[in-house]
Length: 76
Image 1: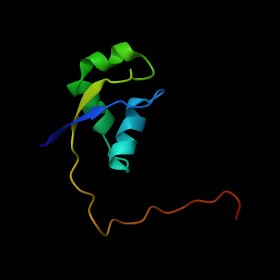
Image 2: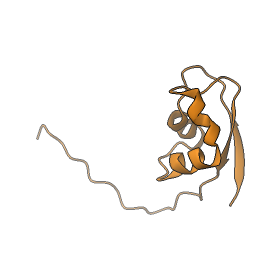
Image 3: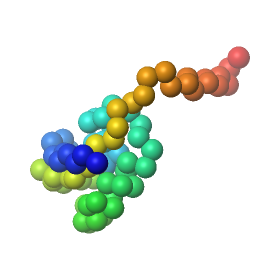
Image 4: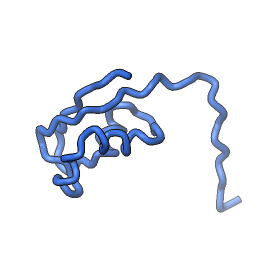
């Protein structure tokens, strides 16, 4: 397990947006793990404070050859 420290640099940043900006993909369970590692985040309410540093577990690299998610269209 590798840890990383992320710093909030933009206003109106939520935890899931901060993680998305860093890892550029959806990592199931990462938001919950980050809340568990940083229990004081709940005091920031909806948006994280500027300059706040947050410990994050670095997810493993994305595997190549993942099955594509089928697209459902409502307007066929």
